[in-house]
Structure formats: structure tokens, C-alpha cells
Length: 159
Image 1 (cartoon, rainbow, N blue to C red):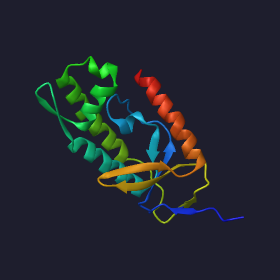
Image 2 (cartoon, rainbow, N blue to C red):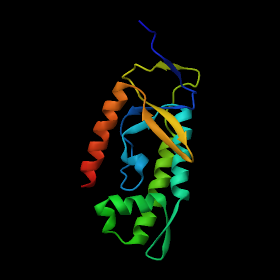
Image 3 (cartoon, rainbow, N blue to C red):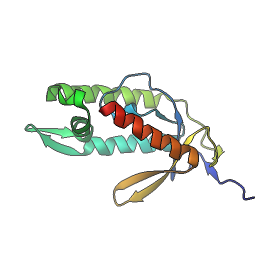
Image 4 (tube, rainbow, N blue to C red):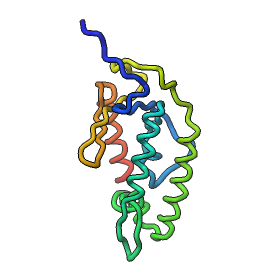
């Protein structure tokens, strides 16, 4: 029988999360809408970079330039669609500051640790770069099942 693959916590090609809840409630920030909490420095760094990329994206809506989080929320969230655009922009800024504070105060695993890819203790995603986009691919059966269930939960919450 083959030995299970071991993933080092400092491996930037993997994102490792625990399932949990954020301290604050989020309506716009997709990081805060998920239940995936980073547990490694490499994952935390990836999440922050992803947020910055989304926030750097610019879209013109109602003669205003908005960032990617605002644009995505306006497309997907009926509650946000009913709000005044200036209020949505202000809420996104508040949520961004809140999620950054939460991320900066997470207890992370030591960089010199590792985990078996077969674990059900963590969600493990393989990160693959395609042009300027990083795809997160579930790296084990536990994560694949969670991922499918999470997509259903998010879809249901937005309908």
C-alpha cells in the first residue's frame, strides 16, 4: 500500500483551511461568506493576495467605479441589489477592514509542520496558476465533498 502524500504547511502550492465561522457577519466579502478559515501562513498569504486582486478590479456601475467585491455582490446578492450603491461601497470597505483584522489575528499552524493529504481534519486545495488566475482544486475526497456541499449552500443562500 502506498504511503499517503504529505503536504508541508509552508508549501505555497496548497491552501489549507479548517471549517469554522468568522467572528463578524459578512454580506459582500466572499472570504467572510465562506466557512473556510486559513490555518497556514501560506494559505493566509494566498487569501490576502486574492482579496487584493478582487479589490483592484474596477467596474463602472451607475457612473461610479467600484471594486470587484462590490460588482460581484451586486450581481449575485438580491439583498445587496436593493441597497443604494454608496451604501454598498461603504459596507464593502467596512467588511474588508473587518476580515483583514480577523485574518491578522488567526492562530496559524507552524510553517515547519505537515499533514497527510488523506486527512479529514483540514480542507486541502491544490493551487494551480492559469494565466493571472489561481484555481483552487480540491486535493482529496474530504475536500471535494465539502466543496460540492459548500457550493450548494452558497447557491441556496443567494436565492
